[in-house]
Image 1 (cartoon, rainbow over the protein chains, first blue to last red):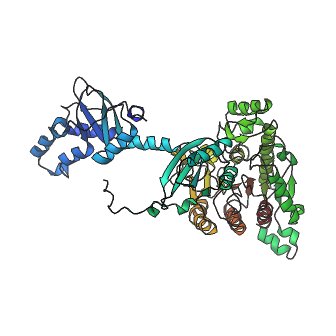
Image 2: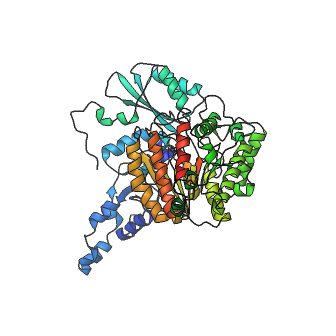
Length: 230
Length: 332
């Protein structure tokens, strides 16, 4: 789960002396939102986003007088970039990246080595791909929702029972449940043939939850509202 | 035409009925799946018995299986895949491609018999010997991809039938309706770039059920964009949601597409008593769906409906579900 495994390696970068209109075109052409800016030694010196560029441009470019337009067109990336942006190392974990992106409210983090040389970039899109991979939903399978007592060894019982049926796991997620003495276990099983294993789990005294009855809003309400995301 | 017949033979029950074919062959039970596997040979015996007990067998035109020519299988599947499957059976492998696909030495042969029987039915429907038909075949087909066996399926029966209709019978537009509780990933992928085959599927929501495809936003690709439609149904839902979605998604799309033949991937596993899914469709709900399909076919396809068995694992319910299914075809 290291950033180096999930980041985009072929980063599209731009020279600090490039014009902002060229940078805007580069973003649009590659359908991306972040352009790291590097020096001749490939060291990260800044980052510019599509929003930075839009903020630097008037609402309607061709409505402004020619001399103003020339001034804007002459703006360079280095004039509007965020200097010394937040970055991470390739040895950071995906969890680090998730939390950093959430806390700092940025859309992507450049990945640099100890000498600040650019190695890649990890964006919300890369994290989404990693999350799809973790959920295992790229492969065919069936989701079971199992309610277990909150005590040691419950997951083992489930894993053993499923393994005995010769079924592979796509993923296992454990979530809080409204009853604080219980946990909801979501197993994504890589099979269509779940009838027998379902019965087996029930015979073991486990409760299979109706997936429709499992809502996040059944969780105990936190008094502090969650911090709003962008 | 049928109405004219009705007028001429008022009160004469036999003539009011369609020439409905029933593809059934005891050899379809020779594909064995092993312990704890729901796709058992007894499914077919239940279907046969249900139709017989309802007094419908004598009204159907029996069709026996014959092996398909490989050239028709190759309309859908890669040759290396077909060879791998044949070799696996020859070597008596018990599993092929995925752990769900448990099989025996005869499976390849039986899969060929399923396709062959269906293609005979297609010929007879196109020559007018049959008006419509129900093909009670094993193994099922709609999960099979061009080069991968999945979800109890080996050859994609319905996809081969569609391509055969186009290649051999000169049909241009084929509509496929798949009401098996699982999404027919194979069928969708085979036709996703094709605007001449419309694939409609209604199934349990892919976040909960196998195979995890068939989301509402999957509409086909390239030239085929807009010729795939999926209606995912949330777990625990039944007749009401099925009726609402079929009215809003299937009926307008097929009236618009105007298929010349309708193929049905008939899976009975959305039934409330079937433990392969969380759906709560009733026996009457299945009849309602089929009634709407034959009505669609009457308007666009000269009544040509070829229904092909997919899933459905509740042995207690299969007899009545199959009997109702063919009765609707007979009376369409």
